[in-house]
Length: 245
Image 1: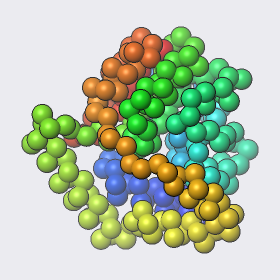
Image 2 (image 1 turned 90 degrees about the vertical axis):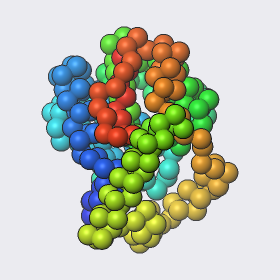
Image 3 (image 1 turned 90 degrees about the horizontal axis):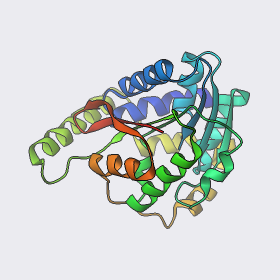
């Protein structure tokens, strides 16, 4: 299996867990195209294997992309797939001061998807605060993620959970790889397999975090110093959050 084939499997796998995933990216790219300069500099935050970076480079001619992730396997795949079209940097968003590695660029936009929910709420506020300090006025942040309904919305939470289950069941029945199956495939690429022990070491002491609802994200962005905050897309409990510096 080649790196590009493994990336294609990642896209298929992720679409099983995220309904209408491509719609998220379409909205993000539309905002980027309509708001940012014609040849923007974009930070793909917590980039994984480069799903956003690849789409930006394909859809926005002249874009310059910097991608970052702390997962050495996913970042390694991003490097293999993106090559010299993007700069891939190792940075741990859970550690204060991570943004110092990116001060040489003037970013027009930060895009991220299905990633920041791994952070604890206090870490999330820290990331938003560092982004607000890093970005120039007018730059935008777009965060696409599941932001679960809380106990005050039991019916919506139930409908969303059942919809997720139906999407997963249909995708896996059609042959999409599960999360675990994808990682087994990644282990077959020697360049990535050698990074698996380091991945296990980095994330061994990081348990799942309490999920921050939409209201927390919006409040944290305002507290961090973003001037305009809202949402640009929603499907059940799946959102694209927008913030302008």
